[in-house]
Amino acid sequence: MKLILLSDVKNIGKKDQLVEVADGYARNFLLPRRLAVEATAKSMEILDKQKENKAHETQAHYDDAVALAKKLESIILEFPVKTGENGRVFGSVSTKAVVEQLEKQYNIAIDKRKIKDSQPLSLLGLNTVDVELFKGVHGKISVRLKAIEQ
Image (cartoon, rainbow, N blue to C red):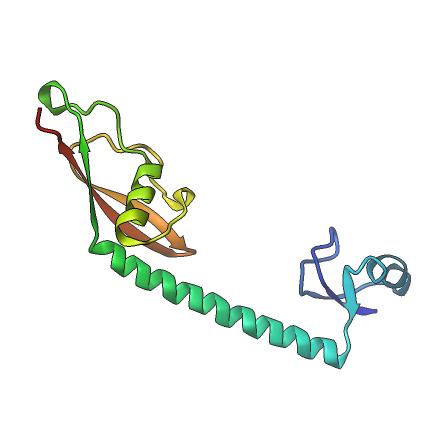
């Protein structure tokens, strides 16, 4: 029997995949548990429409990420930090602080887990932080650490 899977089924296939299984397995296991539906013309049409909608949605997210990456290139975040002898920084600036400053100053919300350079910033001057905005789309945030005058 031909079925369209509604969720991942171990040893059978992934969601939205068209599979051929034994009639008894389909009637007694997959269909009652709503793991699959029968592959009719109407269900195939619905599946195609869902795939098309998902492709449009993915393209929209990709376009948004590219636009955000361009916007991030022009942004420089500044953080005043305490320094000791020879310009050594006391403490560091975390990725959480970078994300919060970006949200506060520019109204740009980025998940801190998307930042690839997970080490805190501890060098005076201009630092760049790499952010993965979408699969294959990376942005760079410039962060300047300035010494506080004491």
